[in-house]
Length: 351
Image 1: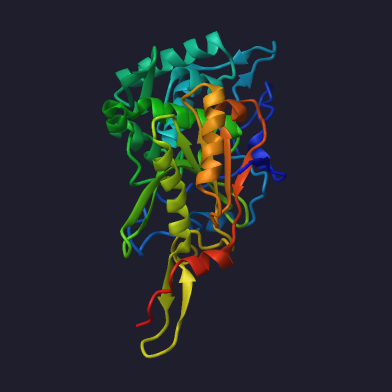
Image 2: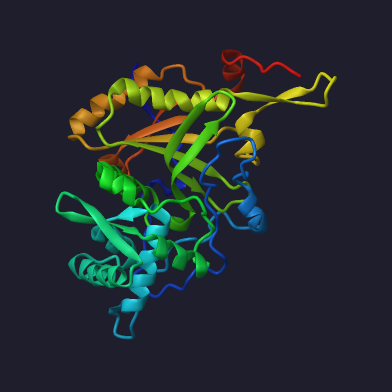
């Protein structure tokens, strides 16, 4: 099939313009991202942490604050502030390089990296951050358990009790994939809503044995707690495995649960709507980002994925990382269709 450019584009798709002037911290508390693991029916709904923010504006600022500007127009990046911002960023994206942190914290190039590099070395001395591998020549940084505790004790971010540090993934050789996920997050929205991201979010249905981790989930602080799902392929998966991962989202969306008193007819509801994304009327859109290869090969991979998921009944948008970084539009390869999805997956038997 031939893919066509989607007429609908998400608001954060193009790179936001970041003011180089003084910018204060967010006016309200940082909004929550999704709950880390949903292994059974007793999960905490994704909307729970947003209850106190029901009146939040669609454009509520949950970004990391920009560096302050001195009276002479030069950026002021005190060491303590850089360290604090680095801790917060790693608490959101889990692993990052100095280049990526400088892009968010200082919005400078060489000078910004030197600020962040010194800050990370100091955090390592304090036992709050560490490096366990490299992406090419660049060290990959992550928080230590002590760094996570310091962040939690300071209430800098929403509670994420099951979030890992990322150290095991880096040591196991998955560091480059994690760095690419961070690049995807920064390309999609930059510092905007940075604290509303969570990485490696488990989606599971105990009854069927279906379980997979979503690379990144963005929960925007809107009245409906708008959620977007992100999968990144860094060129390491086979085409068949990539397609299966996308179809797993349809299987997750298609599962229904029966509810009703014993002896009554009862009724069925989508599992995700009852136990995960409780304030949504439609299943969250899945964004697939392709990276790790030359652009012409990524284009071929995009076309093949469009063919492999033809007829899928959830909303799927796809893009390549280079295009996303240039602010180019997404391609729509799947449309949400609850009616066809319900026909495709059998109803659970009532008790």
